[in-house]
Length: 316
Image (cartoon, rainbow, N blue to C red; front, side, top):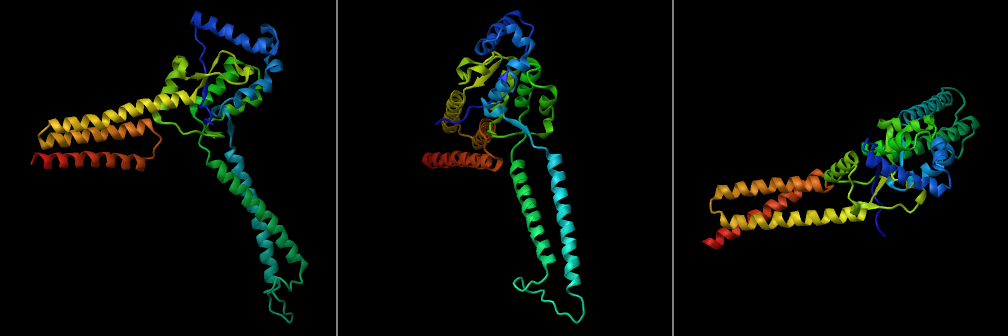
């Protein structure tokens, strides 16, 4: 089963007549699917589109499932729960001091089984419930914080659907969540290489998107002619081919060049240049972390150095 597709992005409106005509004809697809006149759809999108279409559009790709994490409210709730537990802690401390005072009564404070004070038992039950809620909430928020911030390109695409492509389809107040860019996270993020992100930004800005990298969503209601869906399988296949060809060049060319060059300094200069180029290629074309990229570059340099050593011994 193939991986979920990557983001779709909404086209920017332009003043080009041909582009506008194309959009007009394709935008009527939604009206046709809904069996609604185009004029009525444009006048009352909140009735014919609304959350029925918007939720399907958002669900058509992981990239648009963007939500707020409410970091400020979460922090406030954590602080409130913490204070509630602190008050219970103070109450328990007061009871403990009361039953530990010097006097004729010898209360057994060292046994749960022989507990005779119901107030302390009831308080411990309250503390248990409060701690359970507190710990559960913090653990859930910890998981939530592991979701990366929503990419700006995806935020702009959702915002364009709400404000440009289908204005008034969703209530302004309810659509305002997309304006909290610093608080938005991706529910199901997908790591992408820097060069992939750059290509997406170019496609989004220019509106030029090669057909081989497109796909059609299974839900026809979301097709409005203003959105392109990425065909992730084709994009990844293309990227693999490009990276494979570049990798072969990076391995083959240095060997031939090193065999031709006789000067040691020139060989070291050539190796240095190719190692730097290899490092840049891995950084831009993959999602490898820094130490993984350095390890790959070190292994690549080691291969070239071994080739120099072998060729030198052969020459002798």
